[in-house]
Image (cartoon, rainbow, N blue to C red; front, side, top):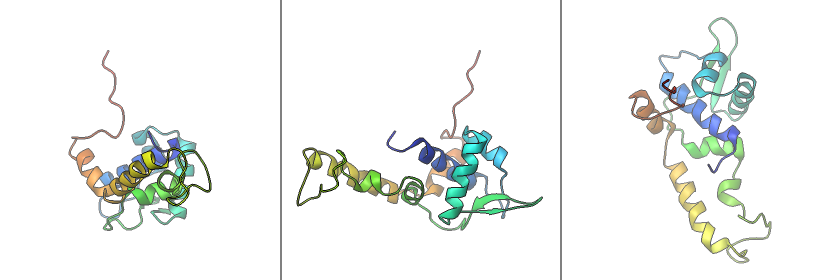
Length: 149
């Protein structure tokens, strides 16, 4: 899609953490990796980034694991994207030109500035909880369905 593979997995991880949240329960790395279809070492690195950006908290020990730092907050998808991929998808020039701006537009500026603005709005107005509700109610997918043989 628009995001790096790391960011796609990070969004899935955040949704999974929100879907499974129950009274402070923390989820283990192995379960998160399985439910998001992300390789375990890759999942661990993504979780470290999410912890570093204050979106997720981790705890070691027998009752340890990972959870959304503030489960009652209305965390939006743009916050997750920024934590992993930065602002590039919504701020950078589509041709990669540093000097591109409204005052000094690149050849494709006018065609893509509206798309970037729309994407930024969609991400900032969509919360992790809104997306998680559909998954929780089995109306939306978080991972591929098993292939019937």
